[in-house]
Image 1 (cartoon, helix red, strand yellow):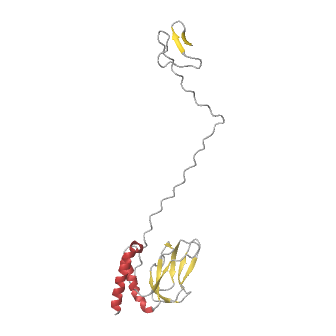
Image 2 (cartoon, helix red, strand yellow; image 1 turned 135 degrees about the vertical axis):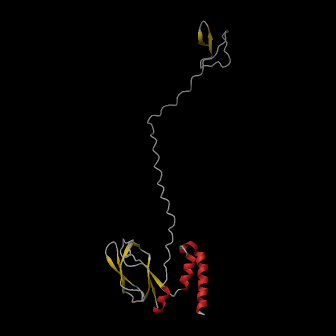
Image 3 (cartoon, one colour; image 1 turned 90 degrees about the vertical axis):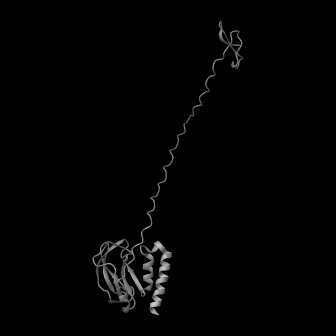
Length: 203
C-alpha cells in the first residue's frame, strides 16, 4: 500500500510540475514529484541576520546529519557583513541534509542551506537529496528611459519685426502707342504708361 501511495504521489507531482513549468527551475517536474514523495520536512534558507545583509558565509555547522535539534538551539554560525552570528533553529527536529558546506562564501540570503525533518526515521530519505537549481531570474528590466529634456524656450522679441513687404510688382509693359498692354498695373492715382519721350508716367 505504501508503494502504491508513493507511485500516486509521484504521478501527481509530475502533473503539477509540468503545469508549473519554468517556475520550478531545471528538472522542475521530476524534482517536484520527488519532493511530494519525501517525508514532511522543512528547508532552512540562509537568513538575513542584519538589516544590510545580502550574502553570508557559513563559518561552521554545530550539528551534523542525524542530530536532534531543539527550538532556539544553535545549529551553525554565519558570518555576515557585520559580525559572526549564531544560526538558530526555530523548530524541534532532526538534521536531515546539509546543503551548503562549512566555509562556503558569499551565499545569497534565501538560498537553501539545510533540511530538517520531524522524525529521526525520516533522515535517511534525504541521503541523496539535491537542492533545486535556482530559477533563472527574469530578463533584466530595460533601463528606465530618461525623460526628454525640456524644450528650449523660444525667446519672444520685444518688438516683432513686421513681415517683409511683398515683392514689388514687375514694371508694366506699355505698347508703342501709349496704351497699356495686358498686365498694366493700376496705381492708386491711376494708370502707369510709357512712351519714348516721357518714359514711365502716371495718368
